[in-house]
Length: 526
Ligand code: GAP
Image 1 (cartoon, rainbow, N blue to C red):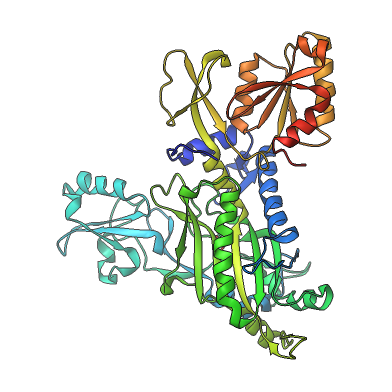
Image 2 (tube, helix red, strand yellow):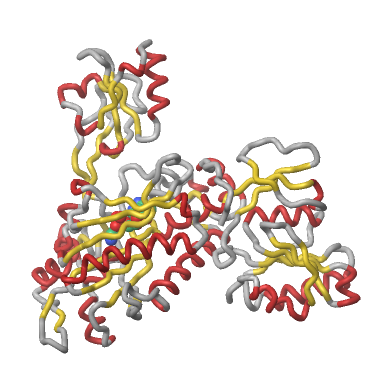
């Protein structure tokens, strides 16, 4: 997407833009919000749908060729969010889908214990200061201010490794005195609900909102084999909502309690699982790059053994350098080698045979599974991070192109700053904007509306007649519209229009009758 190395954009800048321009709002905002929940506005919905559709097209309808050039067979699914609670017993989520948490008895805050660190003083006495991942600098300042000590002499320790005898001298991140943090205890992340009109809150009526879309695939694996004539290896994919009662939802939509996932379970012969694992890790990283995400901001990270989820024998993450993790990276997608853990568990728990018979040899196998699992919501955050650009542009948009600028930098004489979201055209929420040069000239307005109504049959198109053309361009730049079309007096004479391209700001005249075809030739897909 960009060639210049970009400065990381802060979450504050992104959340402000998202609210102001209708991408993402705090959920239940007029009631004071609800921590860990977000609502997608008109533009955010388009952006998210475009990312979802790109994934579906490239993973289900037209997946890439396999490692030996073979065609891959992947089918789609849309399973229920609430499933028989036995699913979660078998999958291990009821007993094992836990995060360690610690409570602060004073501030009533709750923390993921594995996200907490402590600045321990050099001697066995004195207050130690707990801080959340990413907030070490603030904690160091607290040591200087409160303990009047040199923070460099303090040791950073993960909270779960601190001896329980030291708890009484640890001051929590939001506390004003030490000794208020509890010992870490396990907390199950699944949201509970109760089924049936007469249901009480007894165990027999308890059900769970799915914490991943994957289990819906495993429990439908036999249905798909019996109905779709798929042959091993094959994939089943689904996109949908998942729910996790996260202890500390943080960083905008990065970690929320309700989010969407895009997951594909790739069923293969156990002897080939390693080959497919490597294939999918490579393929998935390249897919994100194909959407215009700069490869310098992506990396592959293999999990250490002690990081692996209960079901997984190997896992690699595709990580992205978010503004709030920079210069570090954070997870975007995980590609897990799940072995035959899930099929074994569901076969044993349900009593239904889940083996696959290889027709040619008669061999029966319980397939192994490679799972590329990414967050759709988190993917949107990556697209927003990646697209956000500030540039200096000549005032009045007349001569000269844009000059890269660091966020917040002062524009030089004769220039102004523009914010432009450089979404790849296939992902941009609005594809084209149509402007009459002047709103008080009916002949211009009429022609602009005519063109608008033709183009909107094909794409999401904005019509804007308010204010100077330069301001209208800025409004569209800020939401990432790739093309703006202006109808002027020449248009009335020769039936051509001016098309202005977002990134280069270059303008060309295009015959109105060829406009849609011209835009398609520039990468606007239907
Ligand atoms: N089925 C495997 C699975 O769910 P995961 O790593 O827990 O694996 C996959 O989740 C992806 O879902 C993550 O890489 C992330 O993009 C997204 N995700 C997980 N928890 C999330 C949360 N609380 N908020 C937003 N996205 C989340």
